[in-house]
Image (cartoon, rainbow, N blue to C red; front, side, top):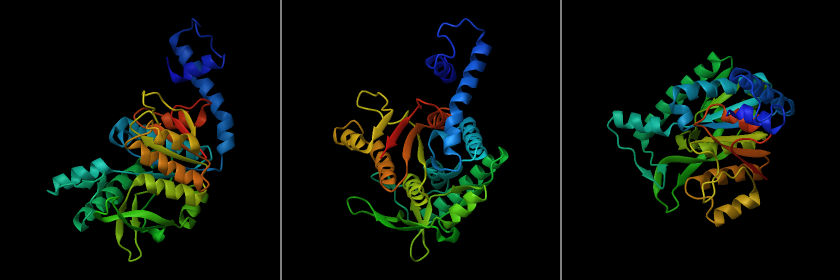
Length: 307
C-alpha cells in the first residue's frame, strides 16, 4: 500500500477495502496527499527551511534527482530553502585515487593541508557545482557557496575529545546571515559546502550537520531537516520515535535509547532548537520524497524534535 493511499484511508477518504482499480486508488491517494499538504504549504510560505543533504540520497542517481526536484518544489511554493551538503565518501574515494590515506579520530577526519586541498576540490569544486546544476535543471535557482564567500561561515579550530590534533578541522563560531538572506529574498537557493574560514582566512573542514544547525540558528529557521541513512531516531527495540521534545530527547540519550552516531545529530538539533529554530526533523534519505512527506503530511514519516 502506498503512503498516499494509507493517508487517505486514515482520513476516511478511501474505504480500507475499497474495490477500485489500482490506478484509480493510487490517483485518489495522490490527490489526498495534495489536499493534506495545502494547509502546511500555506503555513510555511515565506519561512526558511535549512536542509542537510547527505548519505544515500547523495550517492544514488534516482534519489539525487528526487532531492533536487523536491528542493525546487519547496522553492516554488514560497518556502525559502537553504541546502547544506556533505560528501565524506566522495572525499575518501578521491584521497584513495590520489594515493592519500584517509585517517579519522572518533569519526572525525584528520585534515592536513594536502587533505584540505582534496576536501575543497571535492566539496566546493565538484559536489556543490553538480548539486546546483541538478536543482537548476528542475527549475530552481541554486547558488553555490562556501564559507569563503563574504566570509559568512567563520569557524575555529576543533580538537577531538581526547585532545588529539585534527589539523584543519573547524567548528562554527559565527554565521553572518546577510548574504544568505539577500539570496533568499531574491528567490535564490543557497547551496553550502561545509568549508569554513578561521580568523587568518584559512579553510577549515567542518561537519555538515554542525554547519546546517549553525545556519538554521543564524537565520531563525522554521525547520532544520537532516537527511540520514536510517528511518529516524530509533529506540532500543528499533521502533521509530516519531516525535520528541528536548526533555524527552535528553532522557532517551541518558537511557541509552539514542546511542552511537545518532547522539551528535540529535544534539545538533537540540542546539538549534535552543537558539530559536522552531522544529528539527531527522528523516530517511534512502527513500524518495520522505522530506516532503515529513513536512507536508499530518503524521509525518521521520522524527520531529521540538523545543
